[in-house]
Length: 72
Image (tube, rainbow, N blue to C red; front, side, top):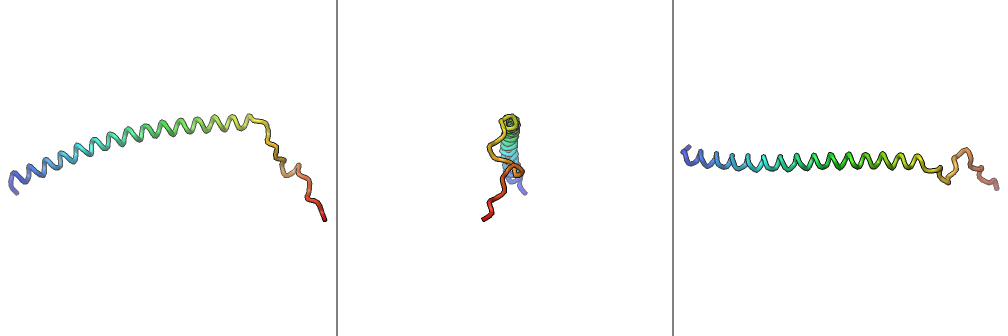
């Protein structure tokens, strides 16, 4: 291998490494943002669950309260 070939390969590797570092940084930021979004969604779900448990019972009767079907 000549020095020019080695230098060209080294330049290519340095360029790839720079792009990979940039991509890793961008992906890290995206993962951090998604973690925040997931936390917000989880808290919203907990809030809705609490609200639902505080709402008065629904209009649907339980099976024990239902009248038996008519006999023909």
